[in-house]
Length: 458
Image (cartoon, helix red, strand yellow):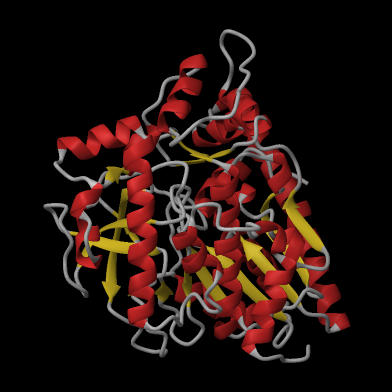
């Protein structure tokens, strides 16, 4: 692969991703300047990034205050309005919504009304058929009308639904790809092959899969780990597997289909080792972990150094009881696949957010896209704490145009003012993210792992 300058590398990316870039700002000048204009989302000078961040977040806060009845009421009860946001320090006054809010919804037609209530602004015409539609039928109706409603889930079995309009969803996809490829420089170009270790984005409303549609526009040839329809009912069955005959049958299907999937992925890696072609593997790390376990059981290892780049989604376990730290995972990738740690990166994101924190190759700290996205760490009183302290993760998301993206999560993190290893100027999180006591386990890879207990697809 010919190594080009970073500037040319990102210009090629923008050409490949042009369908995800709005033709004009469309009234969102601040977001356009903060997300689409910067060459490198992680190397914007601090003063410039602060100005971009304030313009973007103050604009989107005013938008939700003006056009979301429930959020305006929420803010009025807390005595905060756009008039109070006069400078960057005031951004921390913006009222934050607990992430549990997006799990608190009714079923059937009332679920459709709930989505319309959460959505900011005017909805397109949505036609709901039947008196008791399923979640998937409601999602299909919204998405047929031009929306991009997707969901995630925790172990409690309550999905998290987020009503994105087309512009917000495409901003999320663009931000994900731009963030990942900027950190992965110079590993990518449009000629590389891809393997998506997630469900087919065109056959699910699961956010972990859906947001990866852009992957097909960036890679030469994309293979899929899971190429079948994934529904909310299938994921719910995965959350609450039953014992007895049904449970035994599910286990048998899992073992057979898992074996076929591992065989396909191993063959694909073998072919690339023989051909010397470059590739980009993206998605759930536990799938790759299973591939590596299978190779080790066979007494095999590969030498893909200089060929492969791995970008995974975080928050995962190999099984219900064991969480593998990202550093240990990188060690296994180096040992079994021959891909060095600097080409094995993890991403921290969630269905409620359009800001993607990506590990730097130098130190594997999670860097924030701080020109349009403000990460926060909150103490027990839910007030921001200083750098270097543990607390609840929260964020202000300037790319969330169709729902209020000012959210407190159930994750516990520690944030540093800047990376202690690389020279990128923005704030970072330490790589290991915890869950607050009593909170559901979350993470896109966890969702896929549970779903695959029912069907390994493909």
